[in-house]
Length: 220
Figure 1 (cartoon, helix red, strand yellow):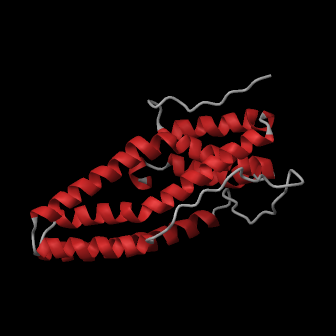
Figure 2 (cartoon, rainbow, N blue to C red; figure 1 turned 180 degrees about the vertical axis):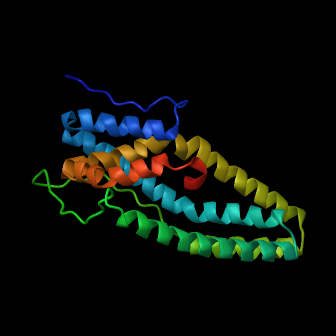
Figure 3 (cartoon, rainbow, N blue to C red; figure 1 turned 30 degrees about the vertical axis):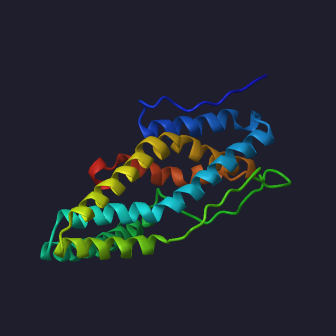
């Protein structure tokens, strides 16, 4: 009996693709040989390492280009406004999370891990890209260069901002986004192999349903 797993069509919404991956894993994941599961898990770990490697450049590129749009003193006001919004957002999120966790129909508990196999799923390879910069470094460099070219406009700075953002957009839209179901598949197979997938779904489903019922503007 041969089983083939393929990525969902690109015209499907990301959430639909992820649901298909989850359902397919629940139905057919255990039928896959351990080597195949380990291969998908290895691919997911590689994609995770790649994303962490590119993340500082993503933060830098978008922050740099955003500050350049608002030039001069307006850029400082813009950043202060963002800081205030982030603080307010985190405060409200904490209150909402506490309120949701206090509801009777949402039971969020720490559960014990039930290992379904004698050995955990071991990846066939684990490629780790060097992390020359952290996300904080990308934040600092993005703010610094953004403010510099905001007060001292330069054609070179504008070109560099546009080109770097173009590369990052291409990576996210054409490179990583189409591979997102494959990225998630490996970790789902890992949880299923370890015997924790059903427990994760069981404990997270009420909260996931609650989030799904919220207006899209609240969850974006």
